[in-house]
Structure formats: C-alpha cells, structure tokens
Length: 116
Image (cartoon, rainbow, N blue to C red; front, side, top):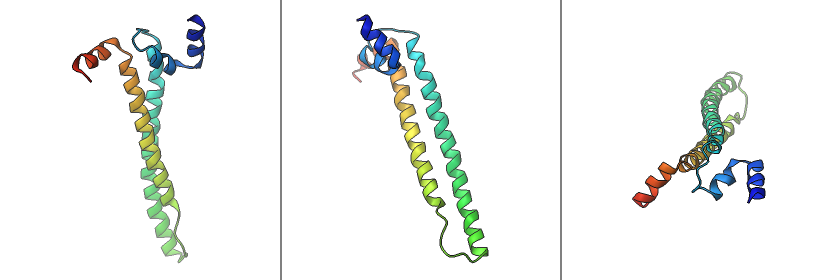
C-alpha cells in the first residue's frame, strides 16, 4: 500500500484523488488549484488573442485594399484556432474544478444524498 502511495504521489495528485476519493486528504486536493488557475488564465489569454486577431484581420484587409494586393490574409485561421483553444481550456478548467470540489467529503456527501 505504501509503494502505491509513493508512486501515485510521485506522478501527481490526479490519480490519487480519483483512485481514493472516499479518503480525506486535506492538503493534496489543493494541488489542483494551480491547474485550475492556469486553465482559466490561458482561456482568458486565448480570448484576448481572438479579439486581437479579429481586429488584425480588419486592418490587414484595409491595407490589402489600399495597396491593391491580390488574395486574402490568412488571419481567419488564427482566430478560429484561438476560439477552439479557449473552449478547450475552459472545459479542462471546469473538469478539474469538478474533481477539486468532489475531493471535499461534504460536497461528495451532498451529491450522494440527493442521488446525483
């Protein structure tokens, strides 16, 4: 049992919380705080980047028209990539937040008593 504990703690807190959710380990659950903050922080950065890419597309279109350049700028791909990345980071952040909340025995008891 101690070997399994050492291996799981060496590789991170996620498997430890998912394999033994019924045990109360008050400090290890807070290791999920950093990935939650990073996920939502990156989602915000991607959101801002998406807004800037849309503005950049308008400016490049104006420059293309003024200089009579053929073709179109390919900034629209960047905006789509940033939008998909933003959604991905929000989903990951929400998933880790659910695992974090589920690690509290009071929340777990509340969910099991209501049948969720």
